[in-house]
Image 1 (cartoon, rainbow, N blue to C red):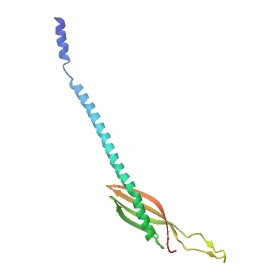
Image 2 (image 1 turned 135 degrees about the horizontal axis):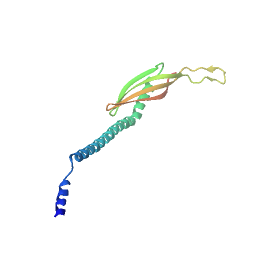
Image 3 (image 1 turned 45 degrees about the horizontal axis):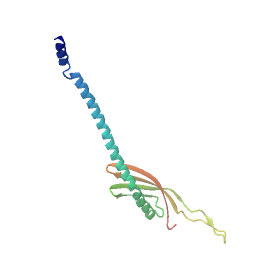
Image 4 (image 1 turned 180 degrees about the horizontal axis):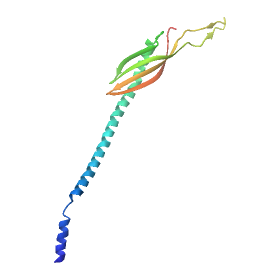
Length: 152
């Protein structure tokens, strides 16, 4: 009969978890959930940034074509600075272009007369700065563009 009482006593002691064990398990569960949430949030933010960057980079060749046409059409004669703004798709952009070099073609001499012909300045090298915006994401691009005056 003594074995029976010991068994009952041990059974009553192992009836459930203590308050400390429940609190520790809850804290560990909270840490796991909060860490998973932070990782997921970071992945979502990175995905949105990548989407906006890819969209602007995809539209950039169209923007550059428009800017290059403007420079070649309007940047004639003694014009040394241009700017403008436009939109392509859902991206908008503004740009400025400054001439950083303005040169004449090389001097050439006419063989029959021996006279050197000195041409006027005709070729321009532009520094172009483009600020592209899409869904509150803005990025700046810089590149060089070459143009020439049609009528030197």
